[in-house]
Amino acid sequence: MSGPGAWPSLLRRLRWRVRGIRMRLRERSPMTLLKYAEVALLGRRASTWCYNFPSHVLVELTTRCNLRCVWCNQADDDWRERHGDREFDYEAFLRLLPQLKGAKVIQLYNIGEPLMYPRIFDAIAEARKVIPHVRITTNGTLLTEEKSRQLAQAGLTQLNVSIDGTDPETFKRVRGIPLEKVERNLDAFCRLTRIPVQLWTVISEANLDSLERLPDYATRWPNARHLHFQMVNGFALTDRAGTPWVSSAERFERFRERVLARCNELGIESNISHLNYYPPGTLERRRDGTCRALFTEQVAINHAGAITPCCGFSSFSLDEVLSKGFRAAWNGPSVRAWRRRMLDRDYGPYCENWCGFKKVRDADGLDAPVEAGGG
Ligand SMILES: C[S@@+](CC[C@H](N)C(=O)[O-])C[C@H]1O[C@@H](n2cnc3c(N)ncnc32)[C@H](O)[C@@H]1O
Ligand code: SF4
Image 1 (tube, rainbow, N blue to C red):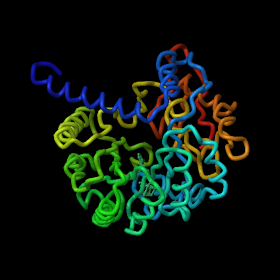
Image 2 (spheres, helix red, strand yellow):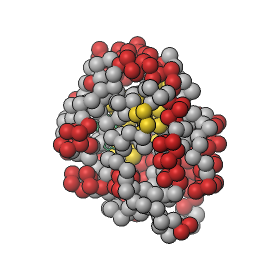
Image 3 (cartoon, rainbow, N blue to C red):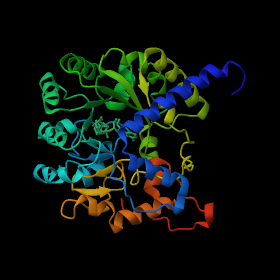
Image 4 (cartoon, rainbow, N blue to C red):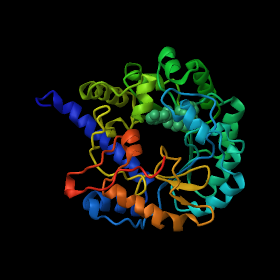
């Protein structure tokens, strides 16, 4: 990009990047930032010991869901057979919570619908006693007026609602239900509560055009001042669902520019400037090379009370937390061995297929085994 016309756009992107960084800083503790810097600067030579307590914790309360969105694991019969319809035992959750003291944010969902967890409101209220920010991400279908009030009473600090298209056809193609139902529920939620809302959306070729309207669309809800974008994960799943990656980097860049500009005009925040494009299906190494999920990004605990490599890889238990204790597991041999693999960029098929991390054989003469270690 060159010429005088490029400057406003560059400045705008810079401003939004700074805003995004400020937001991240607010949610991360100083020790986590130090660990982030260590991994970034030392690469393979970084330590697998994490002196930082994770700033973000995600706890999978349920793997039940009332929808089968096309690119979700829930749409995979085999996945559901092996992992679906499981729940975190509530008493065990209460025992886990004090061990998570020190985290700044807890997200009470994973691959399932949190509003289907029978004690979701109690879980939120108990979590608030220990962790300042408590969030859920919901498909919005069960968000009745009564539940909206209960979420406010429980002390929820942020509601994320998944919106994968701004027109009824696109939304229905992805989520299989009428958009209007979710819109009406969100109308009521914003009328009844002041809880901040983030609209969460997954980007693929199949819904990209519809998402360009998202900043304007979001203005319908006074609580929705933030858009959270993520690239669709899981190449096998998305190919099968006919929702492939955005067809070219140029197309994605144009989309990003327009969304950024419109967000800027409307005063809406978004994370779009942090997303990376990498070619579909090629498993190109991601720009920053190392997955930081178990270093500085959030730690995920599945319904069985086990630390897992990330929220997507929740079926693979690294270490047990409930009897062992979170701190012991966080720096226990299994989790540290996984961190070693990430530092060595020894990514197995799951990381390659789900997130696009590519094992690097040529860098630093690495030649480690490829197996995923579970699934
Ligand atoms: C798995 S859902 C669970 C919470 C809730 N059921 C919902 O749909 O919001 C959490 C988020 O992951 C997103 N998601 C699902 N499948 C995905 C995929 N293959 N790649 C990226 N994000 C995905 C959803 O759109 C949603 O925003
Ligand atoms: S994305 Fe959420 S609502 Fe859709 S199937 Fe997956 S868990 Fe259910």
